[in-house]
Image (cartoon, rainbow, N blue to C red; front, side):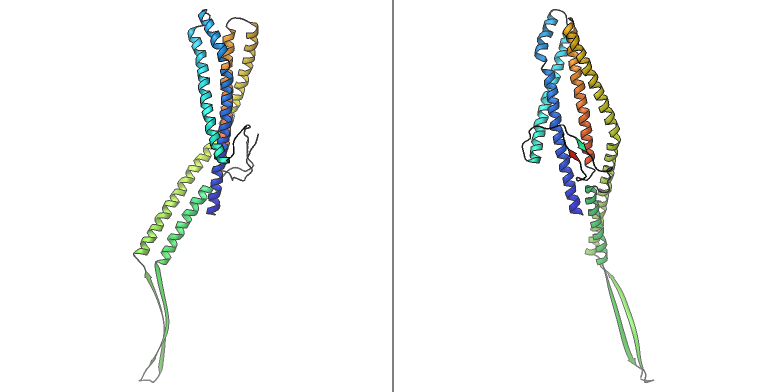
Length: 297
């Protein structure tokens, strides 16, 4: 039981590391692409904004705000590139093969509601506590020695000339002190520690699982809101693009503002989707590794 539980615990940990590295790699590439797309407008816009500022058609503070948006995108691009390198190294170390393209991950569950009764870590801790309890009991039994004697004695009475017989049973107990008692105390202490460790870890896992289950609805609501916001910003960007093609004036600044808003909204939608995947990966650590979970495009 302990060996099987230990192997299951290792499998769950390995699968969690694989899933997290895969999601991190996919997310890093998406974030890098989004930042690069927004940055691609920087060369044209920087020169245009300078001309409009020089012509007193744009405030310097507004121009600097646009420049700050490009700087933020550049910073996010650098972070995403660093995250990508780290995720590639982790994933290749786990699968021992080069990583090329990655598809958007999907985590599917074929198991029922996760419980702690079959959690391998708790099984290992529970088995350890049971072993120490057995040791304490065995030590207590070894400390007691018993002796049973049964016998028959005969006698002869000279006065009467009659023989006599008597039977006897002797039962004695001898309790061993010293080393046996010290061994028993040590076994009891080990059991107490192992039992406390089991109870503490179970309480921690119960809290962790409860929080996971309670945050599901919040994550779903957050993702739904992010999708609506991204769709609204995309529609606004299309409208600003049509206006910029037909009208003169400050519509170019409005178009660039719409581009940045769309970039931020699309990034927020992606991060909300990633949060849901991370939640599913965390929940998967509470379910058997062979319950039918899969990652697929």
